[in-house]
Image (cartoon, rainbow, N blue to C red; front, side):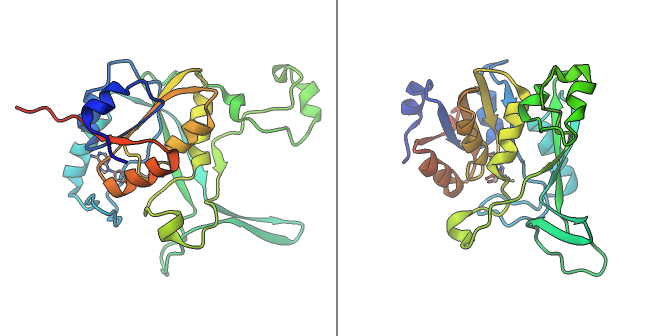
Length: 251
Ligand SMILES: C[S@@+](CC[C@H](N)C(=O)[O-])C[C@H]1O[C@@H](n2cnc3c(N)ncnc32)[C@H](O)[C@@H]1O
């Protein structure tokens, strides 16, 4: 479904606002200090075959473009998103998750991605236990006072989150570079603010929006942008909401 700009503006209190157009233009129209959490994966200039975006800019052009949508932020955490892992235990090796095999005699298969956690000052307080895990050794619960008697510890910065198994990519995941909803759920929960406003400047087919929906107890509003109508339509169909064009100023 497509709705026009004025219709969109009148519905600005809707929980999910999906906007077709350039995120830099779109984000300029957001009020200052109106966003709590941004969860996103931008294009990385790796020559990915997006349906309309050209992911093959010159290095300089790409860096200049990045500076337009990300400035004045500090790296607070580096998280390793593990997509696939093989674990040797009791003389047995078991493999978990999925990866795209690389046909090479130089490079190893790429089974992980970095998740960079940026904040404005580098010292934002997090709710680490919101995505915590139980202690493997339960004796730690009584041994350490900081546990407060609870069987939960910080998960750390290695997150094993496999892609869901799919059988028909064109139907089930019609986008070449997605992250799983669970990855965005963890980012939102870790931030820990109630009634938060979440934004994804590069929405793709909407996994950050699906995560915002899963975190309904924490998220009051979600706004997502993408320049590609094909992708935005997938997200809006799944969410059952409309989408509108980013408002363009006329000169
Ligand atoms: C890595 S993908 C995001 C995928 C998304 N995380 C998901 O799981 O579906 C990056 C997206 O950025 C979009 N894009 C590229 N340039 C854009 C721009 N200037 N404004 C908004 N979206 C843009 C592309 O169309 C692409 O869908």
